Length: 114
Image (cartoon, rainbow, N blue to C red; front, top):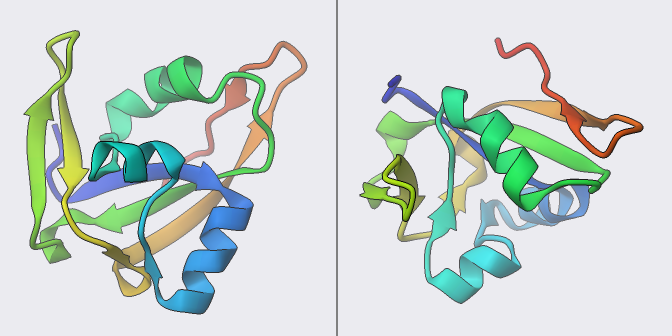
């Protein structure tokens, strides 16, 4: 597990709004749960399959986890450890952004991460 970078999947609209505000408070699910959900590099595909099937206009954000003060790794119901942020995400913590392509079968083409 790479602890330096984590990833957030969100809609392009959510990301555009966050850039205007300078921070991302989370998607609807994040706000309901009280923290922002992230994935590590190996969890991106599973997160897309479980929560974003058939969704278009998605973006993948690469975040420097070492800059986040309120980041906690917690165990999911399946036993995997996922990063959760208990504060807003500063736009300045984003290292890169990637468009996620929706394929005809409803799955997504995961971009090559830099």
